Image 1: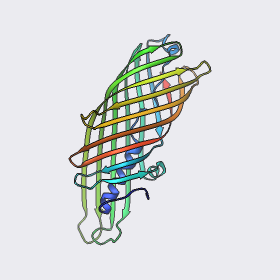
Image 2 (image 1 turned 60 degrees about the horizontal axis):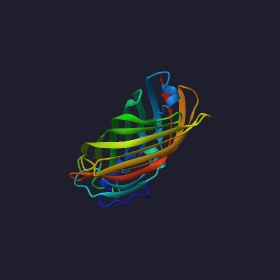
Image 3 (image 1 turned 135 degrees about the horizontal axis):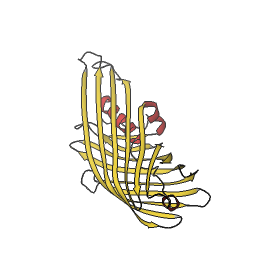
Image 4 (image 1 turned 90 degrees about the horizontal axis):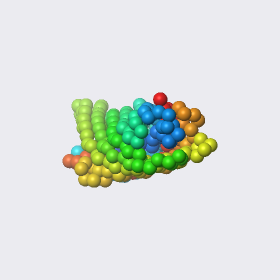
Length: 268
């Protein structure tokens, strides 16, 4: 964790590490279900499920507890894996002709434990963090040709971050602090898709939101290449970048996350 520069105290440093690790794993819609025109011609309704993994690092500024000074954060995906307890990510899309409803559900749980430098007041600092990010929206297919599609997107992204800080051992009585932060960002975006005859496809997704409603600004962009094995299964790989700037009553989450994406889509 050499990339983190704490500004005051070991507990605040550990809290910033933990929130950074969680955020870098969790926030995205990169493995977007693909629905070329050829698949829709025979069935007006389609349901797609797309599990994915985003190997993102994180840079930015975080204050995970109100009143704590912000910490500069720079962590790699390997650092995140070292502290990851549980993670699950998937997109579900229900489409009818040119209209679709989608949701991107993400859950992560991470923990960090370290000894204090002097071990006088407290011997050990333990951080636990759970984060849920749910993106819910609708899509309208504005352009549809034999090989290419373009969807217009609109919806909301719901964030829920719960952090627990435990101070144990030493001469003082054990202490435990908890903080939960919840906010909702409106988002709009575009999703483009081009299907080649040989099964290979190109796809891209860009979204922007916040607009001062909760976050001052949030935006993300993904580009990838995939292969459609058959009418049911396809795979995708690409790269994604996401930024968000949120602050409320001393809680700060101003970060950017980037990294490769791998995923698959199962169409039912």
